[in-house]
Length: 100
Image 1 (tube, rainbow, N blue to C red):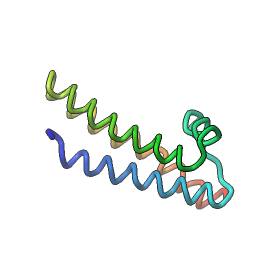
Image 2: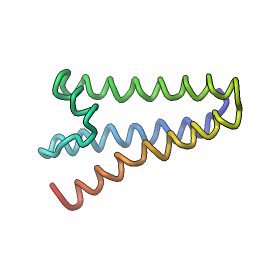
Image 3: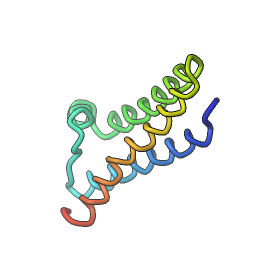
Image 4: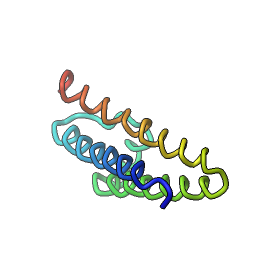
């Protein structure tokens, strides 16, 4: 694995997203991502968790694949993955602090 420290952060933020999603849903909150909400409506909470964990695996595989062709692009993809995955965490925290 080429970007192990980035992957640790990516997995950490993704797991934080999973935990906060479970808390928000348990408090009668809503899933704000329309794709994730469709998965939730179709497959339930367990399906949503499997969907989100599958995305983590997919992103790591894509980072490795891209990096083997262009190291700089693979590194940037791994860094952007962390940043983008932080957005739902921030939204969930906002929901917990101000809306629920």
